[in-house]
Each structure stands twice: as structure tokens, then as C-alpha cells.
Image 1 (cartoon, rainbow, N blue to C red):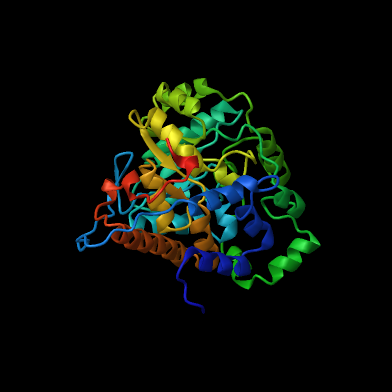
Image 2 (cartoon, rainbow, N blue to C red):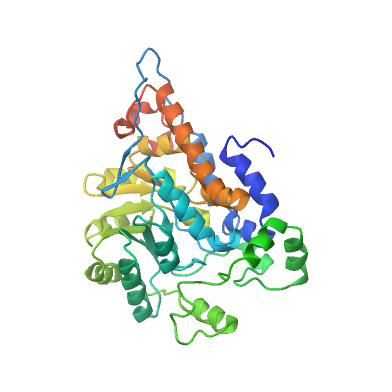
Length: 385
């Protein structure tokens, strides 16, 4: 097998091993995918300031995210359908994250249930919440996350309706997978994937099936989930959640400084500057382009995180330099999962950790908590305050 040295190597291997319908779900954006591409391209335009003659023998990447000690300022982002990329994918990713010492965030739309993760890990994980039209179900989800010992609730606000994801529409994405001839022919060549799926009973949305009375089969599951995205969600719902949730509260999907200011007024502990990986509003700015303005607006009032576009330790350093206190990786760890299961998730974390450590050293930085804009050579005008 080829030597894995970077996240791109994991992506290439995952593309070979994961059925196209689920690989495309991970590795695509909405409409023309311009925002999806900008998430990567805008990171590439940021240059770092190389320093020499500085003692960098003793280095530390350890810090905190919302008060939790972390090996490096990186969390695993919530990714729906992770358990369709690899059998029991959420369980494997959570175990890898725990062993490495970084947070794992379970998606509402996961294949493995909250209770599955809690039973197979020993430390608190985070839970990502979609506010459904069925507020009773939403309230029970919050209670289940609290009962499972989750230490942070990550509420995603940027999905009042689904962005137009053309690849998913053309592939006929569904859970469980539709048994079309095209899908069957593709899956037949993914031996590692389907043998793994035969070995698990988890093939549907574990947080929903068995927890909603009106969901009894695949047809009713699809109908229920299609109807549950709530276009009436507002900041009043964040206040409602704050009354029910006693741990750290993080709001994800912030791209505008005014929305960031609103978050500060509603008892939020941290926000995630995010465009949903370029999967919602195509034509929106990249997360890294939006970050400085949001840091300037509320960085002195709350903790700011970033996701969308992180593929390397250098990307992590650039985000920290522009004011983020931590980042989330989604596709980067999913590529590892699809390529090699739990070992691949661990490998993705090892790669990013090593790249971050080396880059810090070459920039003359020994403590990740000291990273600021001085580490940038010349920020493009897009990123200047």
C-alpha cells in the first residue's frame, strides 16, 4: 500500500474504497461549488512568516477548547452519514479522537446513535443538534445528549432548508441506500465497504429510528426527515435550548458579524465560523475570509472556532493566526475513515498534528497559544482588518 503522508493521500484512497454515492456526499458542495472551492483556495493565498535563529526545541500544541483540554486545537466536526462511509463510522471516529485527545462531535443525522458512542467511549464527546419542527423530539435529543455525558452542544443554524447539492440529487442519495442498478454495480466493486456493512446492524439514522413513534420503516423515515427542517428557527430557539442545556453551548454556521453579535446576547459560549463546508449557500464567502471581521466584532466577548477548508496543519495555524481559538476537521477525517477505518482517522490527526508542529517551528513559535497575526508574512487584502 502507498505511504500516506498527507490528507490528499487519504482522500485518494477513500475515493477508491467508498461507494460513489457516499464519497460524493462527502466531497462536494452546493450548486456550482464555488464556495466549496473558495474554502481551500483562500487558505492557499495566506502566506506565513518564516523565522530563523529562534530556539524551538521545546514545543507545545496543547490548549483548550471551551474549557476542555485538547492535544491540539482541533475537533472532529459533525458529519452526517459518517456510518455509511464506513461501517460503524461514528464509533470508530469517536474512539480515534478520544485516544488522540481531541473532541469528537456526533451529528444529529448520524448512523450510530448517541448511546452507541457513549457505550464505547470513556470521555465526554460533543453533540451537534439540528432544531427539528418536532420540538418534543428536539427536547428529547438534548436530554439524551445530557444523559450520555456530552460536554458541549453544537447547534447548527445554517440549515433552514437544504442547499441544492447537485451530485447528491443525481446519485439519488438516501439512507438506507437505494438498490438501483447503478448503485449496486458501484458497491459491488467496493469489497471492503460492503463486507464491513454486512457486519453491522447500523444502516439507518440511529438518533431517529426507535425514538419517533411515526417512524416504523424506511418510507416513513424518509418522509419524516424530509419534513423536519424548520424554516422558522430563530434566536428565540437558542434561548429555549439554553434553558434546557447545562453544558457548553456552541452555535455553528456564523458567517456574518451581526449574527455573531446576536450570539453573544443569547448565552452562547462559542461560535463556529462556518459555511457548512460549502454545502449550503453557494456564493457565500469562505469561512477563513469571514473570520477576521467576526473576530474583530466579538472576539473579545466569546470563543471563536472555524471549520470548512482545513486540510493541513498549516491551515490550522493560519486560522489561529487570524483569531480562531480552535478549528474543526470534517472531510479530512472522513477521508481517513473511508480509506482505513479507525486507523485512518488516527492517521489524519497524526498528519495534522505533525504539520502544525513543523510549521510552528519554522515560524519560530513554540506554544500554540502564542499564535497571532505576527505569524503571517503579508495577509492578502481580503483578510486585513
